[in-house]
Length: 512
Image (cartoon, rainbow, N blue to C red):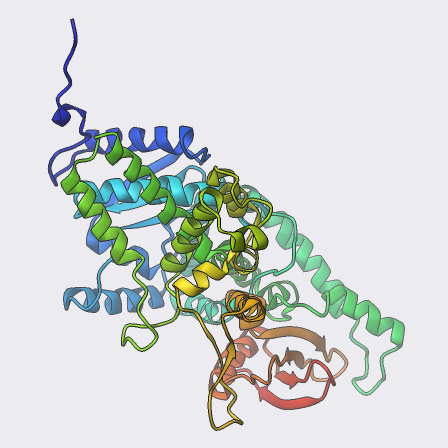
């Protein structure tokens, strides 16, 4: 006897309302396609449903659960809430945490179709990227981050109880101001956050011993010139030059109490957690967007999502990848979702239906037939800058109508620097990739010396790139926070990296 399955019986859901059984069916269906069809691998999933207010709260605290309290989070919450209530901004459909298990927050206000899109996007797209990308594997501890946040929250709370909220807030204010200069940019051992709480006492005792050795090298007379060997020993103990300013302060600031050093370490570890995300924003969103489009498209082909719900998927998807033109008032640069998804789709096109131009530019994979091995390799081994340099095609540059302008303040007009020819494509690709390189966009500031034999002035250098000096008022505000933690004068020199000539100096004293 033949069993006839009605189309409606194959659907995962039918209406806009959902329950947890529906979410489980959607998750299992997405999991099957992500594993068998796309060949993805991921951390175990944990999906949590939150309200719009909780989503706003997550926005305010950088998306991390169990975070410590700080006044800036309340300020951000009020700003986001005011815009949301006035209808001037929407909320993200989800927030996903790079952890093991991977935590995906979904809003209870979402329709069932949006929940399906979010699960495919975050629980499998972002999750796969977090688990497999080499930057995240080298720089973050997905298994330990949730326990570490629990420790950080309880530690800051205990400091508030022992030393007062005002004292803790001052340290956090200064640490947050220096957060962008609290990361190691070169490869180091991946942090073991699970053992941080256990090692806190041992680490503090060791740091205090090293601190005593360092400051015992102070000469008896400030005027006595330091011997060359003594200067080298001092710089070795201080690990100079040092690009990680928070790390330097944590280890070497002369007047910080042990609890203040531990707070600096907490902020530094959180900054390091976000560092790979800054370098892979476009790829990460492109991976997740491509994944949800492929998974939900497959479910629609199988008859498990109705035509009406597929139209809802396409509406949300199109809104996410919309790229305003440069003369549109909504334009704020390249939309990472738009560029990322366009590049993933273009790689699929090159794999399946390459042109002669594609075969010339991408001989390794053009016409290979299956884009998933190429995409999985790209998602694992590259960051935004190198991914653009490797995979951005002339076809996509023409489709997106990209061009490169040189904006030289010394010239009366703008100059179009790259045309659509082979030379122009390569120049345009390099120019776009550079915009995604933090090493090019972030100021290169390092601690270079400390005047231990005199007034203990801390000396930093900013190696000026392309003539871009720091904004003076903002630089002085950040330096005040640095001086507050160091407790002595701070001098920042802006120097020409080629000639070594000093271009400008900023001197700041600590608050009295």
